[in-house]
Image (cartoon, rainbow, N blue to C red; front, side):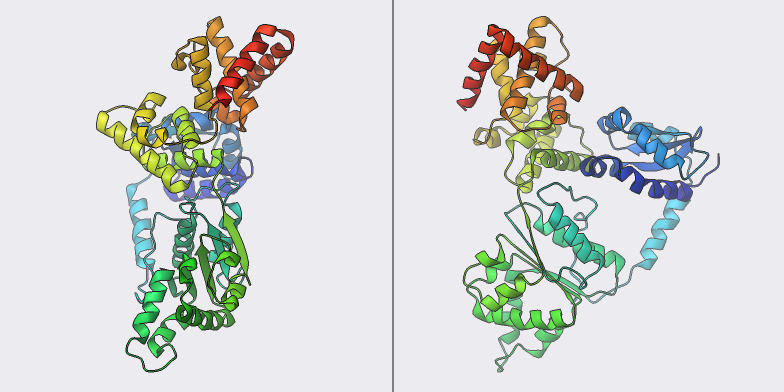
Length: 462
């Protein structure tokens, strides 16, 4: 079958919306979105995955869904085949000139815009690589809506949340999206400190009480104004006055305004109430700390971007230990990557991550984790922790493993899939069986009842 790369990509592009409706958002963002169609061989669409575990996860649970979707748009496709980078040379048959032509076309489409109006946004911050979870979904959807139709809906958009939770990522994603789709739009993204300094510079040699003409013209001719950390204009009445008048001009002209802050507008101290009212006149959304599943997805995405192979057990462990913010979470993974590269080891066991993050983990006194429970069970039954989560099926190890699974599901709130990943990549049905078996034994066998009582006390002393 002779099909060029453009046709293959078109089939894949049409199939993606159908696939997205059949899988979870996180799985789609981390795994499906990372696949690239490269060829058709023996009537199969060849998709390249970034690493082996991604390939295995898709083949295990979602291959039929993908096949059904792509077959709708090409009658000659009879299935799919997932490969990794090590296999790619055997399958690529698309002329490289096609890729070169498309790249050249994209370059020719670029237009130059005055640097006065164009913030150089960080290209790595986009909507495509923003990992969505319950803690940030509302902010993500609102930001995407604003980017698609600036000034039409959610104006102003006010996003608030703690440090390192993704507010700046979203701001740059808005800017990058608008730059790509509306090249003539005039956009400025800046911190509140830079806005204040810009205003001060504008009045240094100005005898008037008003903002000088250059300052006003620079901002009132914008299409999109984005100011990060707006809480820092607290206690600066002149800057607030300048922002108040600028806000009114832009808003009346239906220009988009976006703010971020570390707190709700009502909680910003020493600020003009007229500004507070305007901050709240559009849509106000918060970003909170990500839950465990989202933290795991963020780590997996970052590892993929760095082309770094890391086991699910290690990802789960890092996500459990680092539960403060995304910045520290990504920093922890970077330390693990550095440690592994420095020592020539793989990130496939907890000893590696404990050595890499010794200082970070030693200072953590957070909630009970899966790793802590497994450690307690291992110590209690005098079983090596690697055997407990490994493949050995001797009676004493299997019983201890089932007890650990029961305690994890009983003492902490974590999805069964995550428990299965942590316990050596076991299927969720295996986790359910172990949990239910120990639950039944507790009510009928005093020995198991005592096991659970003793271990629960040990664990809760943490």
